[in-house]
Image (cartoon, rainbow, N blue to C red; front, side):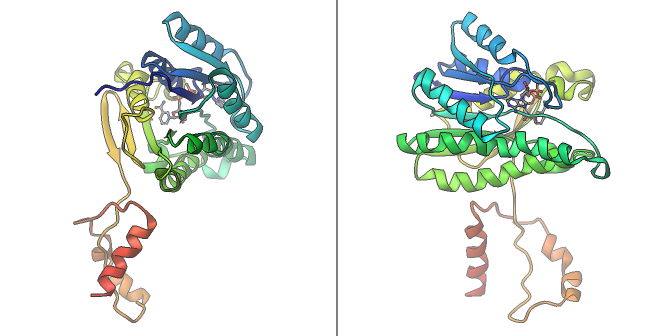
Length: 298
Ligand code: NAD
């Protein structure tokens, strides 16, 4: 079995540069008809340009099929126009890789309202703007693959990126819920936490920067966007040729008994509460509640 997307239509947001461009080229190489979406702005989200058209030309020159969309996915109208573009050009939507991103790095005391809002608008609200119009199409055909783009900056933390980190981890909540809502309709939702040498990481990856080719990330994106992907609600971390999994685990914990604990009990039992031995990886919020119920009923 090999990964192919022949006959499939894939949308990639922010596909005019960096990782998104690599996703779009790889999807096309593996048979997909690709809608290359990019506003073509600067790293901070200002301005616009012809980045999407350039990638479409590259894909066509390599024998692939692609159409450009210059809609900003930061607005509901832009997201709807992008999905319409895919329907007009190719008649269906099978996969969405939401990859568009901007940066407005500042420590929390220095963040302006616009620094907070604009970053959340592109990364987190942008996902809603594209997925809400795409979802009924996927649900109607009983098939879809959604790939979100998170970041270690939010999942693990990075100084000076409160706006970005919060937006990126908001996408994990979105994945968790959509993966439950989509499973019975053939829609699988997964997330990439990438590291790649792009304008976003210019000067940050040191001497080995050239090892962080965005194409390492694109291999994971194309797999997760394909029919051959059967995993759901996974966060795959990829960069420099390493691919791993990041997950949320829950410790077995400490039980206070029938009477509510006192703050002093929490203090006294903190080691047991936080002990990582035998942690589990729940597949939903209900899973964790079931675990507690099981112990309580014994
Ligand atoms: P990039 O700046 O090269 O690409 C991002 C693209 O998104 C740009 O082409 C930009 O024009 C586009 N974009 C921005 N706002 C848009 C909008 N409103 N509508 C449509 N397009 C828009 O950066 P990249 O490094 O390739 O980042 C791609 C994704 O990966 C981002 O979501 C980023 O946060 C994430 N990420 C990257 C890294 C890394 O190491 N490069 C690490 C963690 C996460």
